[in-house]
Structures are given as C-alpha cells and as structure tokens.
Image (cartoon, rainbow, N blue to C red; front, side, top):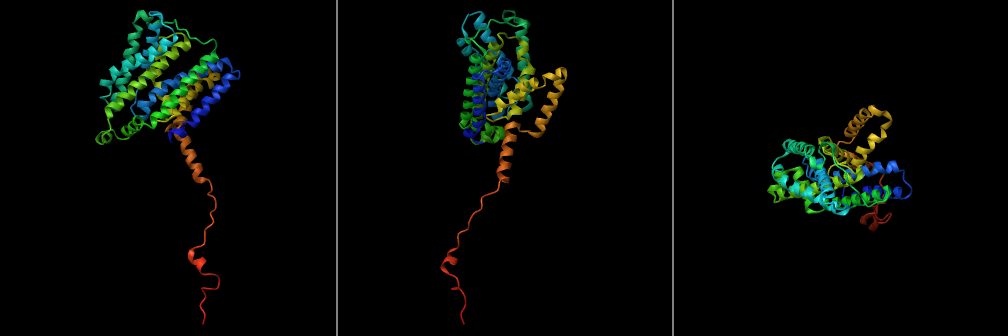
Length: 333
C-alpha cells in the first residue's frame, strides 16, 4: 500500500474522533480514547525498528518510563512547566536509546529480544529502589495547561496525527525503504551498499524518543508515575498492539492500540472472565489476520477488486474487415 493511500484510513479515524470530541463526547469514553491515543504514540515509535525493520524490540515501555521519570524529575526537582517537560522526556529517552543501541544492535533475532527484555527488568529494578523519585510507590506532581478533558484529548489527537503523517513520510524515504530491505534480508542489504548499522541506530533512537514522548503523555494523563507502569508486561502489550494492527504500516499503530485498549472495555461486563474473552479474541484475530488488521483489510480489498466484473469492451473491426466489404471477398467463377 502506497504511503499516500495508507493515510486515508487513519486520517478518517482521527477526523471522526475530533468531531466526536467537539460534539459533546461522553467524559468516560473520552478518557478511554485518550489512553488509546497515548498507546498509539508508543506503538508508532516501536513501529520503526520492530515494524519496518523486523527487530523484536521488547523494551518500548522502558523508554516510556525514561521519558516519564525524566519529566517527573523536571517537575518536582527543577520545577519546570508542562511544555519544558514535553521536550525533556523525548530527549532523555533518545539519549538513553543512543547509549544502549550500540551494544544491543549487535544482536539479532531472539538474542536481541532477550536483551531488550532484560533492559526493561534493569530499569524497573532501578526505579523501584530510587527513593528520590518515589521508589516503588511512584511520584506525582504533574500538571497540564488544559482546562477540560476535551482540550487534552484534542492535544493527544494532534500529536498522533503528526506521528501518522511522519510514519507515512518515513515509509517513502530512504530510512523506511532501507529498513524494509533489511527486514527481508539484512546480509543482502548490507552487500548492496545499504548502511544497515546506521539505519538501525536511527530507527532505534527515533523510536526511543517517541516512546519517551508517550511516557510523558501517560504521566500527564494520570498525574502520576510508578515503576509498575513500565514493566515487561507493558512492553509486551505495546508489541502486541503493533502485531495486531499491522507491523510496518501507517495505520497499524492506531488500530492496534484501539484493539488493545478497547477490548478490555468491551468485556468489562464479564469482570474477571474478561481476560478469557480477550485471549480468545486475540487468538481469533491472529488466526484470521496473521499479518495484522491492515494486512487483512488489504487482502480483502484485493480480492474484491479481482471478483468485481470487468466492463464489457467493444472490439474494433480489423483493418482487413474494413478493407474488404460485404460480398467483396467472395470468389467469382
């Protein structure tokens, strides 16, 4: 799917959400949708290396935590305001990502996945024992310059719209094309001159920065951060959202986050049994759409085009038929 065409679905969804928010949305549903957008931001960051590049990164929640705790330090110690915190979080996550990317990107496959998993374990352990940032109890102090939930939701919507456009732009640029090439065959990509190491580094650092942005947004959404918000399970959920939505696609992060956050809300009536329903729903989605919701939609669209009847065409008479009129080609004795 070409980037400009792949923008249609997420653009339509975001526009519909904006109209809904501006026409008297239910406050509770608006808070749920705000959480969906925050996780869509986190999944958009993961989509770069894990989606386009095919590297199973299980540490996205770690960089969300780095951004959130950097924001907590800026708020409670430096007494910085909201907009400064919105910059500090992504920068801190990008800096940490640049440092750990050097050793991590030497690994591939399951070894890379295990290493990123261990990175998350180290982070949560450190934060649980860092008393200056609240330890295991967490820390608050966050404020935001929005008087109501509608303004905050529209702010999140604008951020996701920018990230959606940025993803489409990257998909058509050398970074996106090179990441797609190394996902298919990294050795071949390197042999034909693609700067594989640099592209992986760029995707990892940029994805970490977006993860840090999501962490700051999550902290300002709940006015609170704690180590448990950024453990391995959270990284796994973001990874699942990417797989369900469609890795390496523009609309995948938004659709996957909607599935991830919306599914528990849909099964709230079942109370404890909702986790069983969620598991069954996830297995069904993966069975019917192994390449994600976007991939399944693309296949259905292609099939419908193939099955649609082609318009009848009127054949023009050949030159011989025009040259030889009726009766002119008969043999005469």
